[in-house]
Image 1 (tube, chains in turn purple, cyan):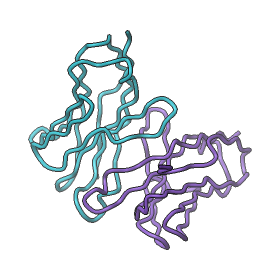
Image 2 (tube, rainbow over the protein chains, first blue to last red):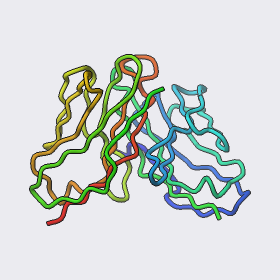
Image 3 (cartoon, helix red, strand yellow):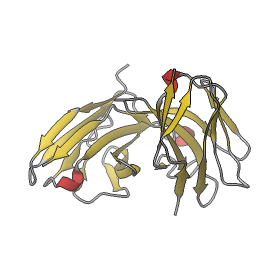
Length: 114
Length: 115
């Protein structure tokens, strides 16, 4: 059971560079989301999707883009990286409905922006 | 808006000690409440949940009761083990239907259990 798979696990960028964090799930979950985890801040929702072709902004969307062309994949794009985007990023998926709050998380992607 | 406030750590205990991590929430309507656990180097995993007032969630010896009158969902375990060392997050969602998949997380509490 692969669950939620994120790549890469570690990445170092220079300010202004762009990159994409990949996320794939094999559980046929409708709902997918991206969170960032910062010390003393808990997890904050960046973007989410309730199904293929549908995305929406979360709490901290600025500087990030997402798309959902398939049920399985939900990539997160950093358009022009800034040091403030140094963080650990988690992708999560959920079956939705009555079990919507039960999120399945990937192992995280640690990003450092210099 | 919704918010979750949980006990700030770190919390350090000896093996077999009793654990309480406090969590209180602010929310409109009737949220569902969750505890997630993050072991070192891993993503978060659901530990337990409760979906209505007076529900008790339990798993792996951990328990938490949904108290609407005090807007609390404190996590307890009677006898902790070294393997329980992790970061614990309290979270809420807006309940069944609608945006119940959008969780609001607390800041997390680091628990270290020493042998």
